[in-house]
Length: 352
Image 1: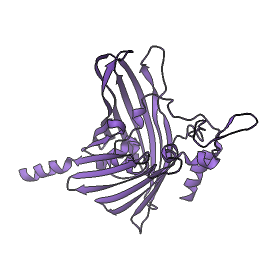
Image 2 (image 1 turned 135 degrees about the horizontal axis):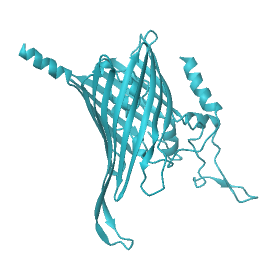
Image 3 (image 1 turned 180 degrees about the vertical axis):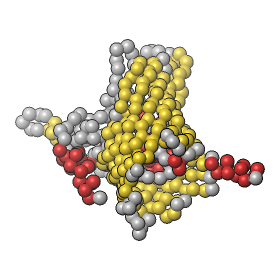
C-alpha cells in the first residue's frame, strides 16, 4: 500500500511544471459529476470496485458482469439553478464483455436575449450533451475498458460538436483487497468549433488511484491523483488576492508563495467509506484543490469536503451526495440504480 502511495507522490513532485488548467478548455461540463457517490467521494472515484454502474462514467474498466441489465439515473441542481444529469444502461455478453450506453447532459436554463442597448429581443436556451458508449473486459486480475463520446454544445446561436475517448485499466488484488486504477479521460477534439478556425482543447485528465478495504474493519480508503498531465500546475498566484503586500523599492505586488507541498496536494483527492453492510454505506471525501480555490481567507467552512450515503432496497440502489463549494453553498446529488434482472426473475417465477 505504501509503495503505491509513494509512487503517486513522487510523480507529482518530480515532473516539470505546466500552466494551470482553469478556463483553458471547452466542454467543461464533462468534468461535472451528477452522480451522488462520486460527489460524496470528493469528485474522483476511479478505484472503487463495486457493482455501481455510475462509477464507470469515470473509469470504464469498472464495468463488470454483475451490472448486467442495470439502469441508472442521476441528477444535481448545480450552481445558479443549472441542472445536470446522467443516465445509462448496461448489458453483459459472456463471450465479449460488458457494454454500457450513457447520456450526460447539462441544462443552463432560459435566458433573456437583449440588444447592446438593453432592448429585449426574446429568449434562448443553452445546453450540452455527451452520448457515449462504454466497454470493459476482465482479464484475470485485470480489467481494461474504454469509452467513445459524441459531444454536442448548443449555446444560443453558437453550436459545437466534438468527439472524445477514455481509456482505462484496473488491477484487483483480491487477497489484500487493494484496487489500483489508471484512467486517461476526455482525450479528443472539436469537430466543429463555435466560431470558424477557433478550435479549443478538451479537458483531458490523467488519473491514477488506489483503494484499500480492510478485512477486519468495515472501511475502504482511497486516494486519487488527478491531472497528472499537468503536474504541479493546478494552482496560480493571484495578484489581486486581498492581503498581499508591495515591494517598497519596486512597487511590485509580492505574490503569495505556493509551496511544493501545496502544488503536490492540489492533485490529490482523499476519500473513505464506512461499509456497514452490502446494502448500506456512508462516504466522506476531501478535495484539496477545491478547498484551496473556494475557501475564504479567514474561514474555510466545508469548502472541499463532501459526504453522502447509499442504500440498497430490494431491486433499487439509492444514493445521496453533498459537495461543499464556497462557504454556505453546496450541491445535492441524487442517484438511482434499478436492477431489472429482479423484475425478469419475478415474471419468470409467476409464469412457472
